[in-house]
Amino acid sequence: MISTPTTAQLLEDAARELRDKVLPAGADPGVQVAVQMLEQLVRSCAVRAANEIAWMRTEEEAMISYAEEVGAATGDRETTGALDAYRAGRSGTLTLDDVCADYSLAGAAVSAALTAAMTAGEPALAARAQELMTDRMDRETTIRGEFSLPGRG
Image 1: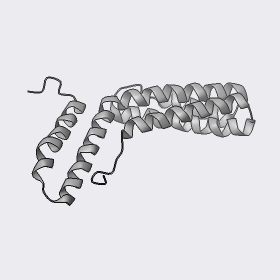
Image 2 (image 1 turned 180 degrees about the vertical axis):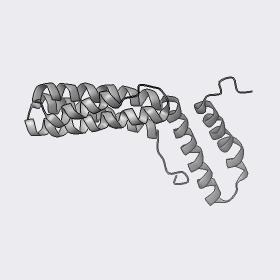
Image 3 (image 1 turned 135 degrees about the vertical axis):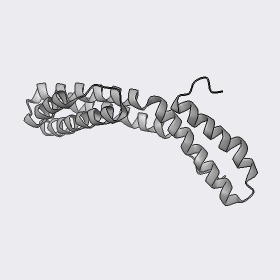
């Protein structure tokens, strides 16, 4: 019996089954590689399922904060317009589809802000943009997990 039937737990259990039961039963090297790749993918999906909404909401907050900072510093109309669209269109619910839609609106605001910041030539805004992008790349590395090519040594 699964005591914590979260999506992440179900995926972890499926990955364990692939690793512990299916993988040892396959003698063909091609099947071994395919099962290893599936197990790795399922584990990665488990990490994502457990954290995806929190990660998007955290990034959304950071993107909007940056866009607000750029909008205030530059008065850029595209940035302030994208912020207005975000505020008007944001659902704020926690369903995955709504979080994705909110995240997309925040992405449009930060995109406009990045363009405005580059045009303005303000070093502080450029430094904050670099921090934002570094945080994003770090999160993507976490989402992907430890990538390896199964069956390649």
